[in-house]
Image 1 (cartoon, rainbow, N blue to C red):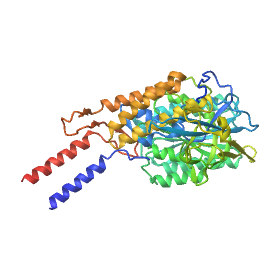
Image 2 (image 1 turned 180 degrees about the vertical axis):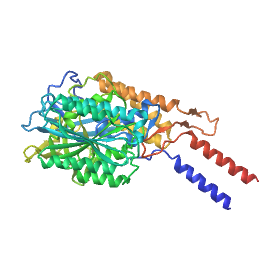
Image 3 (image 1 turned 90 degrees about the horizontal axis):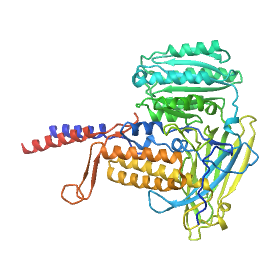
Amino acid sequence: MKNYLIILLMVLSAVTIFNGCAADDGAKSTSVNNGNNTNNGNVNIGGVQDIGVFRDIVNAGGIPGPDTLDANGFFSEHYIEYQTEDCGEDICLFGMLGRGVSVLSSDYMNVLQVGMKSQVNPQDYERPPTDFIAVIDVSGSMYSDNKLEYVRQGLHMMIDSLEPTDRLALVAYSDLAREAQELIYVDSAENRQIMHANVNRLVAGGSTNIYEALWLGFDIAAMSAAEGRYARVVFLSDGQPTAGITDPNSIIAFAREKATKTSQLTSIGVGTDVNYELMKELAMAGGNFYFIENSMALPDIFVEEVDYFSFPIAEDVHFTLSSGPDFYIGDTVGFENFTSSSAGGEATFPAIYLASRTSENIEDPNSRRGGGSAMFVRIVPQANTMSLSGILLTMSYTDPQTGETVGPQRVVVSDLSDGGMMPEGDFYSAASMRKSYAMLNIFLGLKEVCQRSSYYDFAMARELLISTIDYAYAVNAELADDDLTADIQLMETLLVNIESNGYYDYCGNGECYYYGDDVMMSPLGCTTSGSAPGTAALWFLAALAGFLFIRRRR
């Protein structure tokens, strides 16, 4: 009996070790202008700004866990040219309606997009003088996979792109954190040379004291605030705390406590073993998160984005949505903190930033950051009339320059359709909603593919992925859009990974044990917040099962 108990514990341990990533949870014209933006800028709500971790796992031959695909990160890699009216403010609220067939249910899905448009053209935007405090992980783990080298290259680009009125400080940390360079102005060639030299002196070694590094970074930022300057802590790491206070929740709580309207945080993850959840959560208090998957990402993050992630164009943004008598509010996508109620719902965002992209055209499918955020609410009919009457969207925010409250601005949703009714067939209230709806549909399909894979339901994952790819091809036959083309390429690579990793065994003829099932075994790519299962787990469990069988025979 004792031997069986030991073996049972070994089996349970194996299941835990190899468990893998934890689960998360009449038509109008569709023509789209693919030229340069003529309607000023899109905005982003902070948080995750790309799908670099997800893409890196796919390109490496893996199947990402569902936690690596963030809605805001995915939407930020799509630029949509919204044609909106000037409301007379720096940021204007707008809404768009979409109705089409969902790739998940093969039934109609009604969607309201909650949108914001800046009346500031990104090419004309001038941010205020800013103090950048680069907090750089130089622990031993940064030596592998060229992680520290990517950080050096990015910092060199950043130094060359800063304005003379900006200042830069360097904090290097491993076992302890130290100030590798005090705040100095980027106002001379001599100072830039000093900065470049200090970056070149960074050497990897030791453990990772993230808590102390953030403490020192925010301490320097507090001195900037005391001088009346804006500060941005740029935290670069693989996110693996191994020294000092290592509890992720304590680190996140500290960062959120220290982040203020004048001292904010951007986190930049490096390396395939990045602690995605920690790095993402560090940026959720109004900051932003980027991932460096290769050298091609460096100009995007350290040159193009630096002017936009450093200073918000709106703060304390508050949305409300009233549902009306004929619809109720369903699930939301793109909102981190939407709170539903019987009458509708509301959401708040600490800060909103100007997005950097100005065109739907892209040169590199791996370099699409800066498209802007998108937020969607599924509206579900309660009656056959499908009347949109009573659905009201509002927004107010604080102007960070003046401290004054702007709004509320209002959108009457019934005005978005003819006669105030939701049509029975496919419907898009604006031409740009065609791409928006497709972007949402593809995201939902991809998310569910990864969810199914995390449950080892590879047959359904494959089937859904093929359906999502077919849908994307059909939409892109109309739009000929660069972002959707890149989505298709990424999904086709993921499909190859699902079908080629391990084995694919079709037993549809009833001639094998798995009658009627498609059985696929494939390694799941996870962040360090979850394990990465492979066939080793199955071999281990099979060996234990054989051992149990032998014991029983004896």
